[in-house]
Image 1 (cartoon, rainbow, N blue to C red):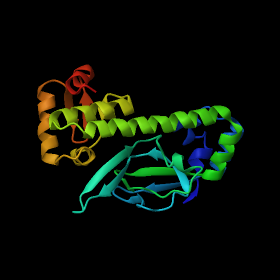
Image 2: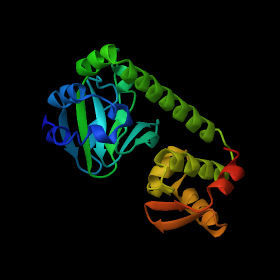
Image 3: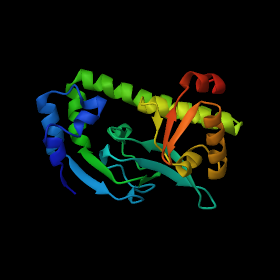
Length: 228
């Protein structure tokens, strides 16, 4: 772990995060001077359940899944973080521990930002404070939406609703997750996910481009199907 040269070079890390885009030069400099970056291999642990949240994490590239394990050791995915996502911003003014384990889904880079630096910016910059509130509100909305999806009993509609949810998060019309991660996210078996994806493709809602890439072809139809 070392000072984040990528942050320093053209604010590379900060430019990925909407929360930081409107910061002034001095605020941006104060962040990258106290930031560190770390790189992780696929399936490497980024943090563990109950580790203290000592710094704020920004995903530079790759993906991180947060998960908990059930009594039989099976993983249940809580959330999947994409490039530009922030982990732990709700701990800036609190002493908190991670409530799940974080695992790199693929080769992943993380920028770690000092909490004290962000606290000072929040106190001095009203616009940054407002954006932070918006960011936390959006995360709360996403969590509530995922709980709503998990409450859908019909597996076909639950999968469709999850694809709508993921597509809306990326705003790209693509869902880039493998079937195991989708299954763990919505409490379904991989075999069921595979069958239902094939059915959704046959009915023209999606196109399976590759093992880890799903193109949404009929977003409105999926929304109507799932009432989401």
